[in-house]
Length: 295
Length: 133
Image 1: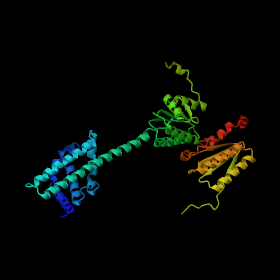
Image 2: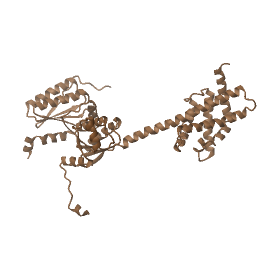
Image 3: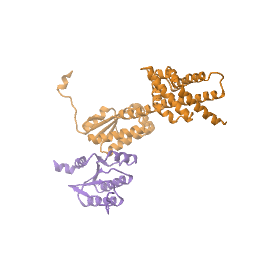
Image 4: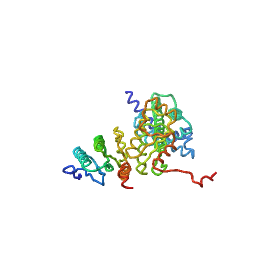
């Protein structure tokens, strides 16, 4: 009998065992921390969840794809496993610790298996135990995969949110819009900033656009290039662009890098830039006589 | 059903409003039409007392380096004939594309719309300003 056939027989054998002992395994697993901490409402709920996992394992074992992480049998419980992993991760567990807990499930099942085949451990029983070990290893991988996927989704979502949140276009005055840039400027962000600014110029019929870089920690040649592009695009739309908030250290860096920002109008602070834009439009701001008695 | 293509490329109309020529570009500009337009503008500016040319590109949604070059050439020719060119009504997407292509059209006056383009020409033309007062 070839090795492969033995493995297949063992897998089928394991599937039968899992189906037989579904109830017992589920009862034991429900006490394991991995399930207990997630389904806190009632133990019955945890048992139901365990049964679903056992059913999935049973299906995978019957199909003989013990080592296949992408086996269709896992699909039904993938979401549930992901929720469990996320809950454990939420209470401060790393992926490795979660995987260790998943490995703990194997002990309960293998104990039952050994108990069932009481007497001398035959060759067949040994094969089934081996199959169980492989299957639990795969389950561990699936749990780890789902938890990592959930993490990646979270990061992608947050990155998108950061793009939207971090680039507001503010209307400062009639015909004057400003973008306070905060954080590092990369190509993706500068693209978003440019689009938002240009649309604001059209919507608000702005003549002046202020790019405030007070919150930009470092300016290198790439960031300077993005700034120049934004300024050029705003000019093509018929708006004058003013860059404000260049800190002394950044001004020195720009000079040291030999970046020529001379085609860009710069002002020290956002207030100076606004004052310039107002003066250019012929708007005069003065203190009223009534304002003098405010203090 | 496909949209009917014109049998010949219709020339871009050049409208005279006082001493300002108004050109409104719509859609794509073909090689032949562009050349025709350049000649038309030069002839009209030279043959009349036009002091300004307003090119409205609000109807242009797709831009390439060719159109950018044509506009720059028209502006250069108009400047030689002692008149000024104002480009107006550019869409955000078009502006971004031009900048990405590296065509920032330096030295060309740009405004948000036709109204402001006329404003700019009126303000910068001392002869007319005196007439108005």
